Length: 153
Ligand code: ZN
Image (tube, rainbow, N blue to C red; front, side, top):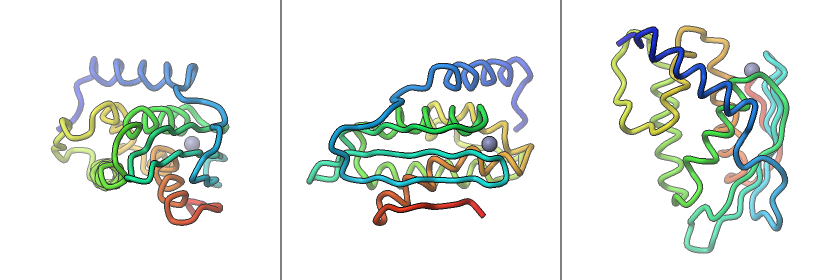
C-alpha cells in the first residue's frame, strides 16, 4: 500500500513537529540504562537515558542528540511510545517497527500495531534513511544490553 499523498504530507508535518519540539528531550536523573548511538552515514548522534523499574516497566526515558529531522523525530516518537511499557512490549514494538520500515514500500503494513511510529514508514522509499529512523531503537537495544556505544555501520 502506498500512502496517499495527503497522508504523506500529514506525516511530514508530524515529523517536522517532533524535530522542532522533541518530546522527552534532555538528560534524565538517575538513569538505570544509558547508551549512545551514532549513524555515520548521516551524522546522526544521540544519547538515550532510561529508568527501568525492578518489575521491568520503563518508568521514564529521555534523549539528547543532533542529527537529521528523521532521526530526531524517530527518537522523540520512540520515547512517547515506550514510556510506561514493559521491556518485553518495547522490544516487541521495535521488532514490528523494524520489519515494517525495512519492508518493500508497496507492502501492506498492519499500521494499527505501530501507533504513532506509522508516520516514519515513508522512509521505506529511501533505504539510506532507514538507519536514521531506526537509530534510536538500536540505541535502546544497546542500553538494555549493557550500554556503551552503537553505530549503524
Ligand atoms: Zn539521519
